[in-house]
Image (cartoon, rainbow over all chains, first blue to last red; front, side, top):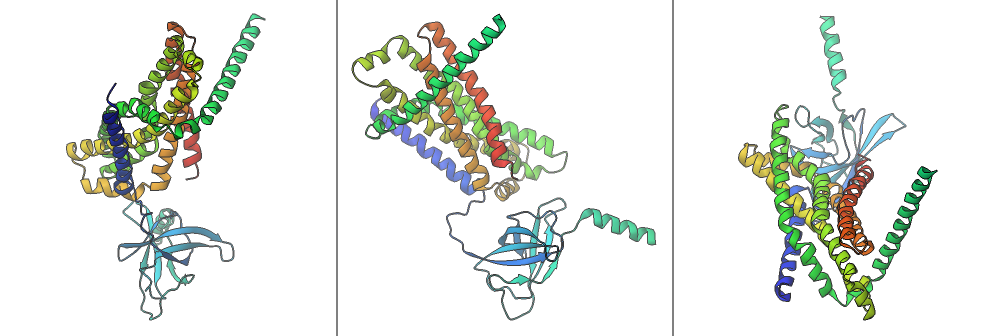
Length: 153
Length: 259
């Protein structure tokens, strides 16, 4: 049997290498950001169609991620989809006429929400709603529109 | 009539065994208090169960990752999507292969050793001898091994997944020329810490409890002859494999079913 002290050292080494593996997984493999307490505020946006958009989808402005989608709900009053956007609080100077559109990363990529700044002096506050929205592209509708246009010609 | 009788016999025997196994499990849980003041017992077993499995797990993980990298590139290149290799390698390792393959290896490497050790202790009447000296073998021999297995397997599964992701990098990026930036960035974008990594760790904790429980119980319950111990060791590996795969299905359905 190995001497008691070197045995304990080996066990300690084993445990520390494993914990290093956990850190490797958290920081290098996944999008773990639980350590930094980044506060955020929520705004909502109504879309006619959100097909393909998922919870936790990225929200980007000028290509820079500034938040994530936290909730997608059906609004029975106007038959629209109400999307709750969670924006990092360091980006608290979005003009109140900012517009939101659902875009696709690449040809078959994930859907994300792109924000385009407007020109108003007032800023969006927590709980505000974005009025100008553009729905997600539905490929079938696009194709049928294209075919109708063709047959009109 | 004979058929009915043997069916009844088999069910009665297996129910009795299940009952003994449950009582054994609760007795193990009750003896944890004894170990709080004696951590050196656990450390010794951590060496035998965890440290000695280290290289097996690292090398297996590396090769599983390398195979995933090769096969991933071959398959994904038909869609022109080699850039997504990182997602494929990391998701399959972290969610499934890491916990499951390391549990299967652990059952073969450590579970069988535990059963043989406990069974031989029983056959040579070391366990009975301890009871004569008023030392409860459940507390002194079995409980430290249970806790060591419970700690070791989740750590080994983490090592397996990490080694596999590096192996996938080795095969996909170094060998077949996938872009290293897209390998890591696509992986980071789609692997979630809580949904994927923490769920994988929970899986391996469940497997650890099941394997060590089975291995210790089979050894403790073995017929104390050389044939009995050999059968108990076989049963440990076979039953562990079945139960790991069955519980993996169950846990996957619960954890990833809502997506």
